[in-house]
Image 1: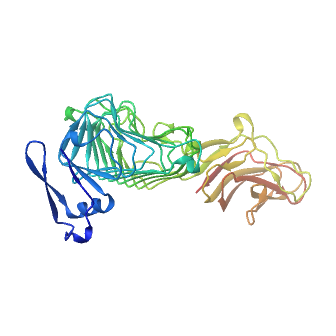
Image 2: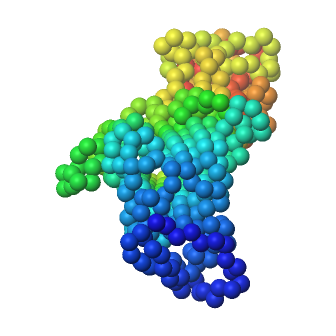
Image 3: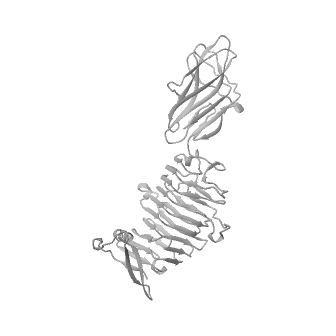
Length: 461
């Protein structure tokens, strides 16, 4: 049986952080003792009026009581699923390597409904392939923030020797820190989110998702994405998503992080993580353009900043495009008036060779589709050929942004009929969502046309 401790005035305690509280309790047959470190004891007594020391499965009820902290003491095995529907419930341990719950039942072990919940300092395991560890819901189709007003905090835990792991639907914040996810054989889902307002995963490890008993020849690999953000269902978007300082090592057909089509991200950050690809036939990050190359231009990825990760390409925006064999002259109705440069069509049309968050129209317009304002440099190299007879004319090439000439971007050349010249144009500008860049040209002397047969066009952040 567990020991329930009523609220105790802290001013009567003389405990240092490294001191221990000795608690004697009767387990139904014998008296036993437990030690709780001073800082942990003071923390849980201060935050909760009731504490239950859990030494046996019978101490963990089918429904957790409100404002009660359940302190796992040792290794507990249970087949009973637990419902958490009252505020103030928490499950904690003293040491995740010593305090453990092994679930032997089917379905979700912990079902959390419309309340906040804290779990820290324990190991969760499962023995049944038809089980999962957490199923949690906090959302409504109406109300402020879709009624996502609750939080889940998981810290200093260990998820080990389990199958399907966590499913979170809604919640204002889900904060997972310093938690180790390993030796999981998930076949349906790993850690899955849908319609969550804010997600924080920091200093965690997602590694070795296979059957630990198969070492030294790993087998029975998980076959899912370690983390998945599902498409919006009830809510309009994920407000903010931060993955920082963690290690991801998917293997076999697993994926590391998957962002589904239809998931809208307000602000996303994937920074300073380590992604290991050894033994991987799946992908580090989905969606992809081609094997191993993330698609940062996909709609669900546009609001992500992905930088300074080991093993993962930065989300730096840019485009490189080429045009070859253009035969379309640029004509002028009057001298000195810039007009849009005529580009090729069909096989000689400008073609993107590589691009992140830029599109290219058939008329030669380069549009930035990212959402964060960025500073860019533009580098263009092209050849030109004066059209029409007569002596040399002065031509001037410009960059235009959103239909307006960029100050100081003009570059003049003198061209004689039949001569082919080469020019390099370099410029810099700020770009916001849906801003676009085009090339314009003017004949400052006559109306003789201009042909740009080939070019290389580069924009980089």
